[in-house]
Image (tube, rainbow, N blue to C red; front, side, top):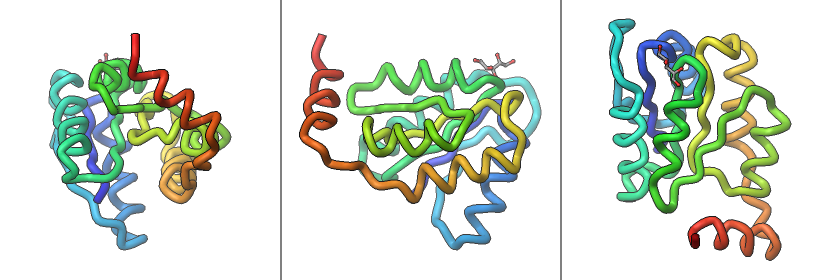
Length: 143
Ligand code: RB5
């Protein structure tokens, strides 16, 4: 189950992502927002982070205008690894190396065609499981 969240800056791109997920038969839960009305991105980052940490969802996709505010917020949560991606290479690498559990994108940065490819790459790339990457991920959690 994929957790989706966005603010007004990411709302239109989220609709495109939902269309893709529907076509692929990929289950998701949409935590809002639900319109173009101005709202605050931390609300949705927190909902999606909680859904993953509670085990309700396996991965998340967060979208705001730049992807920056919403990923900064999600990364405040221990155990969340939100990767802001604007290209497929990064989306693949962050799954292989960082075992990222949230993909963040900027609705004002990437177009819908590229965004769908980024989502496809992110969802279809497994974590490599390499010891060096596991060691580094463990190090993220300590100060
Ligand atoms: C909203 O205007 C915008 O600030 C927000 O979507 C995001 O880009 C923040 O990082």
